[in-house]
Length: 331
Image (cartoon, rainbow, N blue to C red):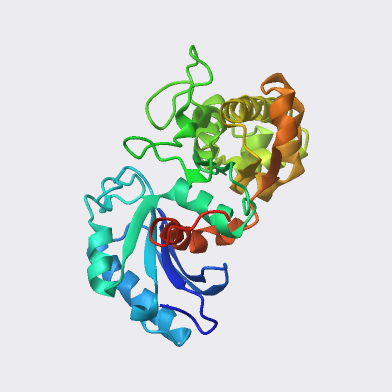
């Protein structure tokens, strides 16, 4: 169950809508190997055997048999049956319905395994190997197509009674809003700041306006407006883009304030949009933050970007295995 230096080695799977990241990771955070399996419009009957084969191949490339591994973890999108390791109805994988992926891989690999929500798994990855290392009270915030949180408080991952703890993107920020979230509710944090929601909002505002600068930054098609087109328009000083960007910053600050005032973390680590865009994204949030959080909370909390960045998916499943199978915590 150990690598050449005596460290335990774990296998991780990160299930995404277009790809599956597979990483072989030591308990000190060395990424021994990684693979990407395409997962757009796939059939689980074809992909599951490939996942097992790829895991075995990664182990072999590090001169290990799969039986030498301490276990594996699966970082999974919702909705899912967390305790039983079943992918129920992932919105970006229409053929993946009630897939017992945990039991399948346990049987195929012959080693212990675990299954956890993807935001929580990403938080564990940053906690063990990235920007949350050494912190007993820490929050990782996914900031991409959607928004979610992985919350570590008192040196333990917050999961909740029914394993839905951390669905922070669906905390309502505006009770009278007409901004519809992907979850079906109105006024959620994700409805204001999630990449998909922002894109849909702009597409609605600019319907039929193919000559608008934001549309031009999207290649001339309203339906192709995304966060990248918005960012380009902001950098170009387009008034509507600046207005929307300012609202995103204010709503992010409102949400950060809720997190800081509720959990009093040592560090808040920000995911994709924050590190991909940089200060243009984070600086206005920090300017608004004092309106929404006590000074005592902001003074105690460092707000930083992810250290694992694009590789976080290769670490996420292995980090879940470290937490649930090896019982690792911050020392």
